[in-house]
Amino acid sequence: MLYPELFKQLESVRWDMDKDIPWDQFDAGKLSDEQAQTIKMNAITEWAALPATEMFLRDNRGDSDFSAFMSIWFFEEQKHSLVLMEYLRRFRPELVPTEQELHDIRFEFDPAPALETLMLHFCGEIRLNHWYRRAAEWHSEPVIKHIYSTLSQDEARHGGAYLRYMKRAIQNFGNDARAAFAKVGVLMASARRTAQALHPTNLHVNKTLFPNDTIQSRLPNPEWLEHWLDTQIKFDAVWENKVVERILHNLSLLMDRSFKSVQELNRFRKEMQATLTGGTTPQPQPDAA
Image 1 (cartoon, rainbow, N blue to C red):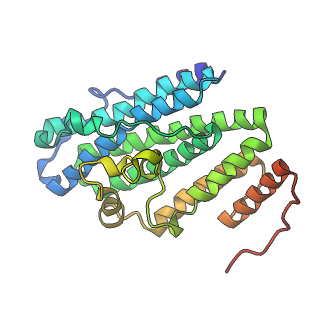
Image 2: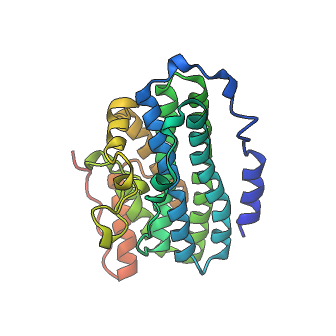
C-alpha cells in the first residue's frame, strides 16, 4: 500500500493556517479590488475538490489504497479553499463566497475510466502548481503572495503522489495503463492548440447538464479563468511550455522512454493502442514542421 507512506510524507510538511501564514504582514495598499475578486474565484474553484473526491471514491471502489489517499488529498485541497476564504474574511469580508456559491459547484460527474482520470488529475496538479507560482508573482500583497506559493508547493506534492499511483498502475495493468496515460498526456500537453485552459475544472463532465457541466461554468463569473490567465497573471507561452515540459519529463521517467515533444508522445500512444487492439504498430513519422 502507498497510503501509509504518503500519509507520513505529507503529514511531515503540512502547514498550519494560523502559525505558517504571515497574516500580520498584510499591506492593504497592495491589494486591488480586481485582485481580491480573483481570490474569491480561486477559493470557489478549490472547493471543487468535494465533487472530485465523490467521483474518485465512486470510480475507485475496487482500490481501497487509493481511496484512502483521497482522505489526504481532499483535506488539503479543501484547506486551500479555506485559507483563501480566510484571507477574504480578514481583509475583504464582502467577497467571502456564500455557502450557496460553494454548493453550486457540487454536482455529479459522469463515470469515467479510473486510469484516464488519474492521469488527468496528475496533469491538473502540474498545471495548477504553475498557475499558482505565476499568481504569486503577479500579486504584490505579501500575505496572498505567501499563500499562493504555499498552495503551489502542495499541488506539486499532490502531483508526486498521483505519480506514485501511476507507477503502481503500470506494474498492475501494463500497456493498458501506458495507453491510458499517453492518451490523456497528449490531450493535456496540447493546450496551445485549444481555445480553453486544459484543467479538470474547465472540462465537461456531465452530459445531461451540458453546457453548464464544468466547474468554471458554475462560478459567479464563468469568464474569469481565461481573463485571469491571459490578462492578469499572464500565463503565456513560456509558462505553458513549462507545463508541457514537466508532463513530458514525468511521462518519460514513467514509461522509461524519452518524449521530447507531444508528437513523440502521440506516436507512443499509437504504439500502445496497437498492442491492445492487435493492430500493426505505426511506423515513426517525422514531426510536423
